[in-house]
Amino acid sequence: MRRVHPLSYQVALHDLKRLLKLHQRRDLCAGIELESALYELGFRHGEPIFNEPPRRGPKKPPPGAEPFHVDLSFVDPHDLLLQITRPPFSDAESGPKRQIALAHTDLELRLHALWREFLETSARNHVRLHPGMYPFLAPGFESRREMTFRQRGWGAPYQELNDQKSGWRKLRGKRRTLVFLLRVEHAWPGGPGYLCAFGMDGCTTYIWAYRLKRDLKHLLERPGFLVAELELGKMPDHTTDLRWSLDWKIEPILVRDLGLRAQA
Image 1 (tube, rainbow, N blue to C red):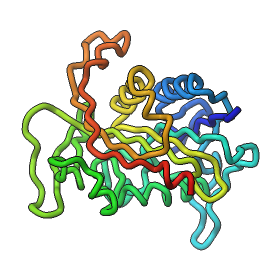
Image 2: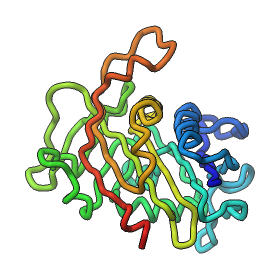
Image 3: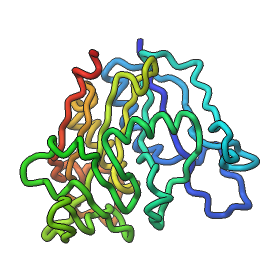
């Protein structure tokens, strides 16, 4: 039986004099939702994988040195790596207020190389699709080729949109944001499968994972790349569950089937 191995990043470290504790991981609640969905699809639990630099010493290899190594000797090619955090390969360049620290590992480099086939820019405040994805955008959503997102508050709604032709413009109407899903059978030649789902902040990542588990589980079964627009509804003042998000509109705006690629 195929195993699913949850891959996690460390939470942000605000006090550089302290060491993060082992359990301080990003997006754990969202990961629980998707792991349980994958178990229902026939997977079993594997091993947690921590994508992070050494706990002591430099957090980045010296110039010219090899990246930090992540041991994957226990992972089989038919297994699945599960990531519920945005790939942060553009955070340093775009300079958002809230950044995900790069781990500078060989695993991270491989996964970022995969993501660059779909996204040219991946930062908390700025996403730009790879031009190869433009033909897969649904009609009327050409302005989602490049987007900036608000950083204050929750939900990360659009700030401005750019269709790469007429320039930047603001989106009127209800607050909306994007969520992403990538599933491939092999993250690199001979490597394991990979599934990554994320929103533009922690709240939308959690809601996206919750909805994928509840009513969109079929999206997890076939290799593909999906971008969907999430309409941000009202969050209750007293939040004791997530059922209030079940009627939030989720509209796929880019769907690329990677089934043929997986069979090649």
